Image (cartoon, rainbow, N blue to C red):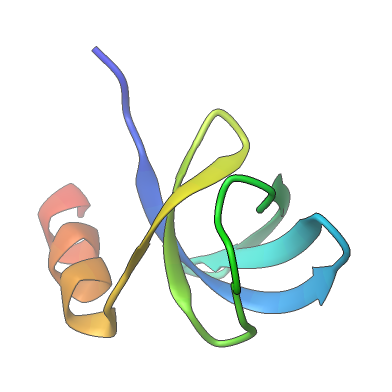
Length: 66
């Protein structure tokens, strides 16, 4: 079973981004997604952003995980 978590992009530096996962910031790779912007929410698996999602979806998943 694979797990992927939503996070908010705080900063972008080339193919990497700092993402906030409910207060925990991690450096991840965004090379699999095009036109990714600061403030967007992404689903992250194994250190890679694999999908963009909206804020409502990210909040729903956060609530479910808690």
